[in-house]
Length: 82
Image (cartoon, rainbow, N blue to C red):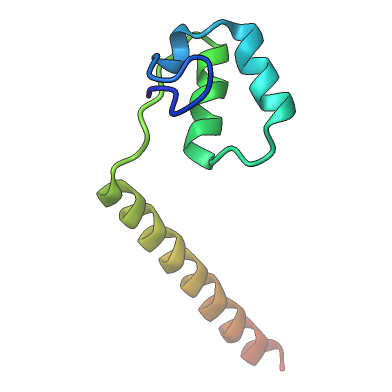
């Protein structure tokens, strides 16, 4: 992932000096989730590729399915106890 702004705009994040990446985490409060993960990976010298739209949608579906199953399980248990 490339740095979207600042002194190192356009550079691959994992190639940016670690001091700058640490400064970003300490001082910029509104880093988006992908940029924050890219900076954290860059501190470990690793590349970060944000998930595709399809991967995000799939993860959201799985999360919603798990929440609905948990809610249904709670309803069933509540009926058994009551």
